[in-house]
Length: 400
Image (cartoon, rainbow, N blue to C red; front, side):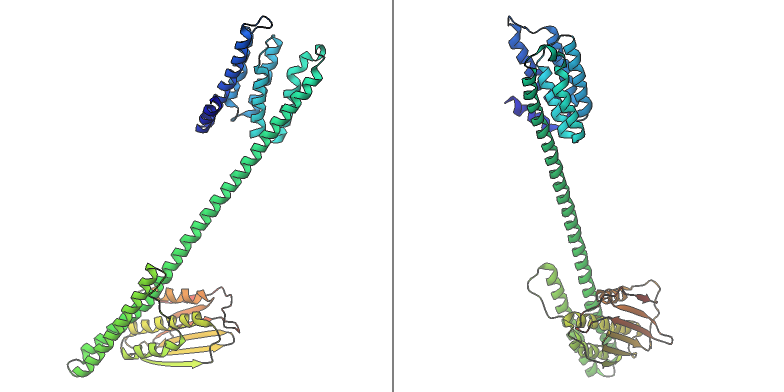
């Protein structure tokens, strides 16, 4: 029960634990001296009691300064023996101090302390004690065991500390990776929402303006345009529900992503909004899968949406797609007719989205005004013979 109390105090803090060990050692030595007080042979004297206190006090610092504490105990032990004290503390306290050295310091400190524990206290008795060699062997065995236990505890503590540190590091890295994955997913969804919703809204605004302009002269034509506005709005709502479904859960609400086969429908929507668009293809796309097709579609979509917003109805644009051995080239140019002024540093989310999509395949993006009127967007996606993306650092030139 007493050892459990000492262990409970030791867990509260190093200082309290060391004080508890010192008090327990003094109490144990005191009990032994109490049994000798009434004996007729070799009774305990005041010097023996003083030795108990003096030797136990340094143990209060046994973990903070184990080496100085040990040698202080040895010096006090030799001094008490020189004065004639015969205290059980001469055996118990050096063993405790030796264990602290082996437990908290390297072996280069532990083994000299072990030799001192065995030899120094018994030097004065060697000439007159015929049984010193037997005692020396017994004490040596105990000392070696104490040092081995202490060194094993130190090694085990270092190993557990390393495991704990490694586990904490792995946990931090996993948490960081999770945050990066969440941020990347949020950026991807934001990019998708901008590409999809901004495109449909731009088409709806252009169609609505056209319907308002033709309503007094051709009501039937205006009604047809508003039907297209309604269809575009429903398609935008469907895309929005799909994206929100991805945010809420991983099941349901999914639809095929657009690709190269949907470019004709995209061009028709832009034409219906009042922009003359020509689509030219050269070469055949390789087995690149849906990923490259989605990138090409979104880049063309964003470029035409910018033409619709900034050049306005009546403008003309040309989309050129070339698939070759070195990859895919996308070029979208417009004539700038009706283009509104662009403020430097304005909303450039569309250009940023195109850049991110191009970089996802190691591509290069060059976007800016043409030499004459108009705007040009050029993208190169390096693809291998199998249609897979090739490593490329990517380069960007955005000119406002």
